Length: 364
Image (cartoon, rainbow, N blue to C red; front, side, top):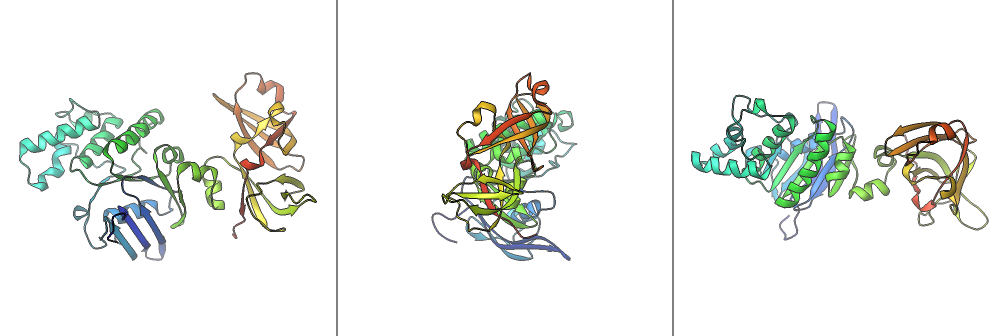
């Protein structure tokens, strides 16, 4: 692990068991130097356990953890090049903001004046100038989140671990903090590894996302790649809204690949190589499906029945069904007259076959 391009974090064949429960199994992952990587998955997927093993708060049952090229399996948290911001923030309620931030500096042997100067700089970094003497109990949720960040950053760690960093915030504040965390990461240039179950949060902030399911790594890629080109059926279904149909590959007399699902034929990208008779799933995002005149030129074009329309502000969500009773959701820009005009009636829908993702069906 000693080279000029070594990752900041390297997990090799990592496993963690709690009795008979396997929380993490055979997980291998690299975190590149200076990147923002998010561990994303459903509750109980093993993402938090993985982060805790990186931070030294859980010991692996099997496998190895390297931090900046050094094997750290047996090193305690305070001996690793990481600092952690916990989900509950773990601030000391009886202390001031400045005392909370400077607490970690006590163990570095710094005098009171140096601790104060570093704490003031950390407060400036997270945009909380002037709150040094405030009690943390008087702060808002967003301010407490920033104090926890400042406390972790004041010791200048090369790697910051974030456990559900924005989970306790309301939606508007969470959106603002997403942008601020991303800006902070770009400004500092250090590695951030975050855990979340919030997909929008992961897509917004991350350079790459690692999808974890049942303790296993499903896919690691950029947010765009994860969203537009999922590599497994789980990722396709887990990330965002997706229309998923099961079917098998057929060919017509032109040799163009098609998928047959419940009696209907769908054109699929020719770059995806499948054999006739392969069992597959088709995935198309709701926002990639057009309606009405915008369908012209699309090979995948169908007359469907509108079952319901949900108004969601900037977009409306159509619930439609085909003649074979298969259902889909469509997201399009809202128009005020759609609710009365289309509900219960017929419309034409369609999409470019290049917006279709086709994957081998996974055995259940």
